Image 1: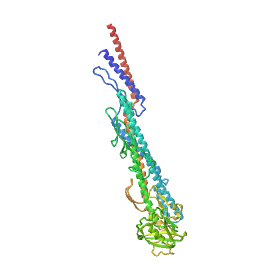
Image 2: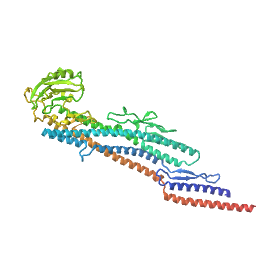
Image 3: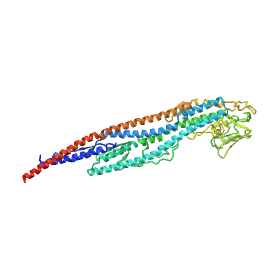
Image 4: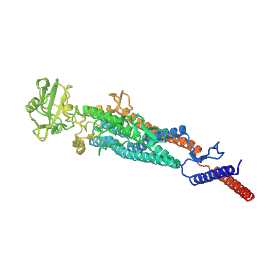
Length: 567
């Protein structure tokens, strides 16, 4: 081997050692950076010149583990969001320990109903109205919290979409920087580390698939196959509604998340974005549906009983819960008994009306005005009022199944149609003594002077007492299958089902986070810097550097000697 070859080989090795020393120092300096991957140096030998070619810096990586990290990051990101929302929902549910959950409030209401049946007096009526108010307030508040969480999720969707767009722009910028540095023959590995970290962040926000092209350009797609990052970054768009109500749904009144104009909402099932969409459109609406089923059934069942009865003494007037028109079709059959009673419950006036004779509400009003001691009218507010003309008397109704009182809601205990608007009659809240507990006599012998309403009559109170334990039909809603069960049992299963769902969300988040951490650890074990190993490498590289430097020095001395011999 010639001296020039020796000097060339040693110089090349010297340069390679310098690069290795620099890279080892860089590894040590970034040992605490979890996004940094260990760098190595490779050199190729030229067979023609017998010298080392330029050193190449490479990243230690594993494509399989990297994809696993992205997949588990998406699952962990989504599950963490779900768990956070479920914890908030758990706080709103209340607890059996404090007695403020729906099931406990239903139990308290049932206890009051039982006490009313045993002794329908002023005290038990007041307690019943109080417990009914607590129950409906608990249902209504929980419904409000469900919609509040939906609104919060909806707002967070908009924020997350903005963050995703920023991540995509960052990835596009890193792609450009990597292309520029690579074209100039520079080291792009640090930029590749940043790109991998940004991709992992994006994966936690929404599920993605990705690959790197032959020219080292990252390409990213949604799980549905839509391009997020090509030669440029795509843009997602979403504008959140200010407040969501129970009737707000997607698709419908809630706008879709669009990608370059295409609605991709339905395909978002993973990552934070997917979890937020699922919470807003499925999980929380399912809870609302169950609350609505409970509330509407409770309202219907309770009011059906109270409207079949009357307070003792009977109230001076009865007013419809909703608005009516004189032209509304009546479409009723059977007999409606109307009685005007005095303070002791004796009939002052009694008349049985054949409902099949009246085609409209106006016809019924006319007939009611024909009852002695009674007046009926539809006010300017659209409410139908039936009143005793003597302020000392009262009015009571009874029918043989036509449900006239229930149709107009004259004796409603509860108001509203679902969980979001359920309430207790304002009239009964201000005066619980007006709670119907007795039933107007329907015997054919009832005449003026006869006892129409007995003060000790608990007919309606008895029916109310058994109401919450009587089986009724519920349609399938949320996680609840269609079933025939009692109101109390449905409330209990709702609470237990919600508790199970909340616990499952916490467990799932713990498990997916552990899986994500494990995948990240496995990748880091492969790619992270081992300081002891790098320090050992530094010692070796420095020795190699010194040996090659000494070789060059010896070759130079030999060359100088040869030159002096020639001259």
